[in-house]
Length: 113
Length: 113
Image 1 (cartoon, chains in turn blue, brown):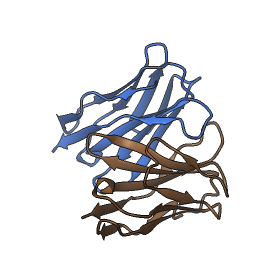
Image 2 (image 1 turned 90 degrees about the horizontal axis):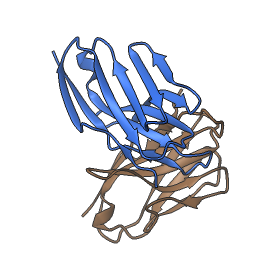
Image 3 (image 1 turned 90 degrees about the vertical axis):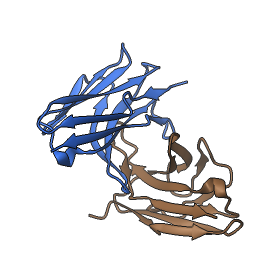
């Protein structure tokens, strides 16, 4: 059974720092992995999607990497800003089936001005 | 571009009452999903649909029913609400292509007293 874990559950860093958020999964046979951002009281916003054949994806200050063999993905945020404060979730799609998307519980990120 | 729209945003029900949550998407997506999000439990799949006229059970379907009469709409019904159904409900949709990201609505906060 696929399990997705995000540690730590919460993280607080000063503004301007580069930081890494972690996502680990137990079954390396994945279809793709997606990173989301969730602001309080809002839905999830898709940040990056990495296909199983890819090693990384970049969007602006965000870079997501994928290492299937070790069951890990990281989300790197460069030059953090207070506006980056949110909960970040990763989700693993196991196969082409529509139902097989497993979410981590998220990391709550706080950027201190 | 509205994306995924959920109505209502908030609702308070008494035990035993019924209600329907509406999800509408304007991206012509085939797949639609209903999740619930609870503290410490993460996102859990209730029901999903792979196309107009189809529905299937997810991880926690008991106490809920769904319908997808039109491709753009996915309805979630609670026939007899229970306090255990107090949660934030999210609708999501995606295309059936391999690398299609998941798009979420802003959620419905439901309280059952």
